[in-house]
Length: 82
Picture 1: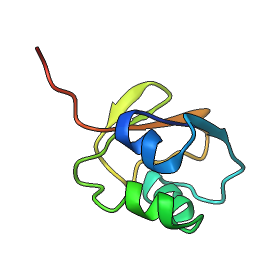
Picture 2: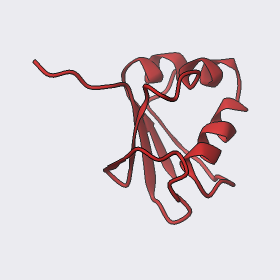
Picture 3: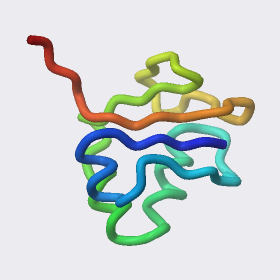
């Protein structure tokens, strides 16, 4: 699965994307897996309430959203208009 990181999430983690083999079936499980990778990930995902998530380029709000058949997940901060 491709996992993309944008803006300050990318800055915390240090890479824009990763190709991962994951164990999790949900977004919540994926975040748990990622935070196990170390302190940079823990810092990036410390407040999941403000992180926006897209699964296969569709915005989702439910951390229990199933990703077992997804090709990509993207994490990004809230967007602002202007």
